[in-house]
Length: 246
Image 1 (tube, one colour):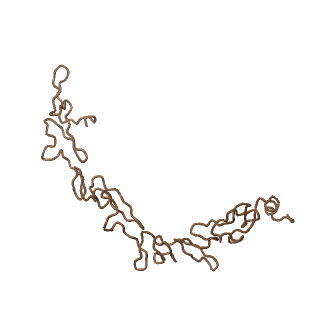
Image 2 (cartoon, rainbow, N blue to C red):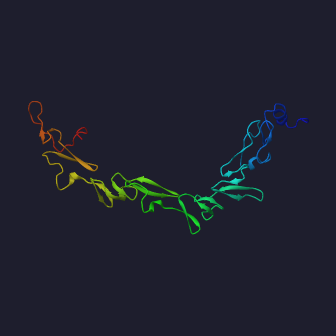
Image 3 (cartoon, helix red, strand yellow):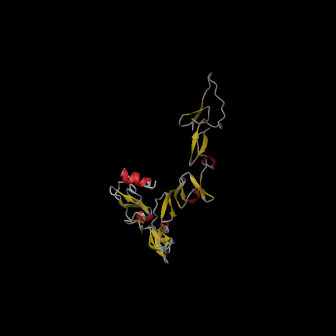
């Protein structure tokens, strides 16, 4: 212990020669970029650090760049931590480059933002003269961008989410209390199903005409069927048809 106080240094670095001291790299254990005491300025990883491999170059942490990771990337600014050390802190989301943390410290606005009264503010793409979304979509503005959302299935064009924001309604629907609601064709003053004994059933946006049980659909009329033995069946024409008939 007295002769070799650092077992790692003696055994791994000097004897086996498979390691290097921290802050050094490669076959000759050269100093990493930025120096062995603080490789890469403490803001990155030295390639091969502590081994006989690598090239000593720096892979910088997020926000840092440069050969020794001492410069700030676009979107970050230098924020002093103390008299000798500074860190790269993230700019406001509205800035591409900046000198400080707010939207008034931008050097250049990010895409989707514009300079107004000394600050970068969001561009409302949805307010453009030519809408950015299709006829069956509505535009929703988000910070720095926009998204196109699908209109409700009952709408022909819309200004927002749901049947209450339709510009017009699809056939079979009408505006009621400000939103598109299904028209019950079977409840109208005029009979939707005109054949005798025929039942009308409302469906979303439409209706179906069905002969009741005990009647046969011949195309032109609902004809009462006969039970075995020649007796005419007495079925209630208002009884709901089976699911298969619909």
